[in-house]
Length: 126
Image (cartoon, rainbow, N blue to C red):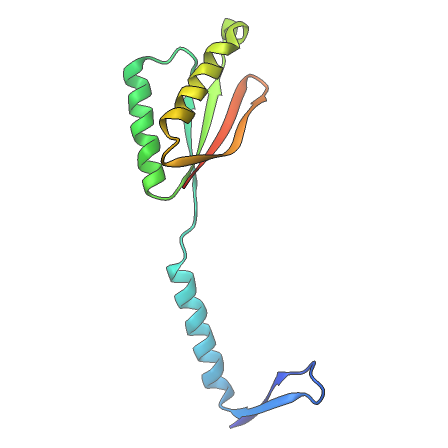
């Protein structure tokens, strides 16, 4: 048995008689169990283009919904190439369409913002 100081900041300090090796082992086991139960949230990325076709859009949306069911965040990257920069309203409409489609299962964590030739938006599951 060991004399272990529990709270040194109190006046007088509080000590306890216990088996310190066993205490340390149990604390280690408890920490390992907590690590095992926690879920790491990943950020999955979906890349879109402004002139995406209907079927391609549907495939991307199914993948996005699957990511939300798994509890992951989704980063949507809309990339403009060449003269597509002149018609940015097409990309804005596409992002609004995506937002409306996933409104019941996801919330907007970071609204659409320009980063050079691409627009980035982050969605998180509800």
